[in-house]
Image 1 (cartoon, chains in turn green, red):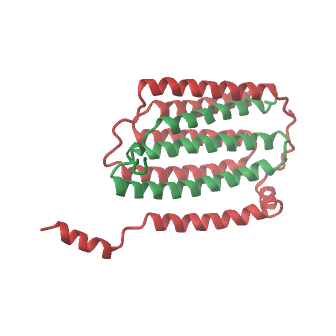
Image 2 (cartoon, helix red, strand yellow):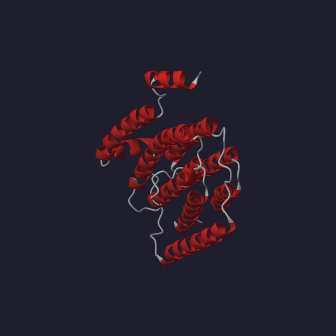
Image 3 (tube, helix red, strand yellow):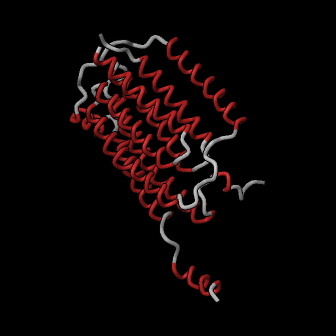
Length: 102
Length: 175
């Protein structure tokens, strides 16, 4: 028997919520980045599942490829920013970066 | 039947990795669980017949992004953030918000009537390449520009500070 698209969508929803909760709850900047990777993977899983089940043909897989490229670029720039943050404030605890707080 | 079993194996692995990251307080273990999730998602791609994408996922994510994250951990974790765990009140709110969002998403997914046919297996690397240089040529070129800009930006942001700026400072602080 073939599985439909629904199990993949439910798994993707679970991964999205997990990533969101990780981003909100963690105070370490790099842990937040891990949460963002979860969210991006949930989105990619959706795209590939739709592509598999005849919605949009191959466009889903190509779009997933772009998501992977964007995720790599995002991780590189975010890590560079966190390194600067670390050099300035000597920690990666994002709660310490509140100089702009009014 | 085999597909079902493999799906639940990979799904369990990825969700367990997410829960482990949520409960963990050690950033290096979090990176390990991230790699577990990425490999499980790559397995799901293989299961869906997206072989090229699965290989790219392992190459770029596990081989690139995850290693980059571990490097970031090692460069910044000399003095780790004191508490990685949220307080009790925060945890209650987080569980509530997460549960509401999850229930909403799952319900809307179950309500929709998705097309349930399986696409013909025309998803080799050659087809993806034709798609990239055909319908997606514009985004493809934009992605190349984005990668160049990201590389330059990261190199600029992470460069060591100029020695002319640091020299008088060190001279002033050391007696």
